[in-house]
Length: 170
Image (cartoon, rainbow, N blue to C red; front, side, top):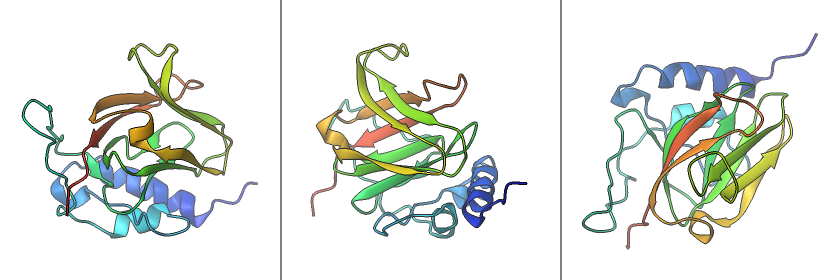
């Protein structure tokens, strides 16, 4: 019998909480740590890290139930065996994207340039079960601010929405 890890249970709890929708369910992953756990993401919340829109006509409109993972140099999305957690995220263009697979199945986190699930891909991370991968550089290396649908090429229905925003000048 396979042992269920604490990270897996925490990720499932985070996913369950995210389904509730309200402001109290929005979490911000602890993105500066070497390895972020779903439990860490569930424990820290903040609305202060939301970057302002880049300018008029940027289309910045965050859904009420999207998770803010805008603090730190790295933003983490968890891959479960059949879904992403969170499946609606707001990130900053200068962040590196980390995908932590807490399941056992192989997945991808892919964004199609044409939004039709076909090549060419703007972004395509492939990873095995129970591994963590990161993008080669910040998101701005492969895409600009905007809203993108992401998906797993291996599993139909495993998808989400990513909103990439400009960093706030300080």
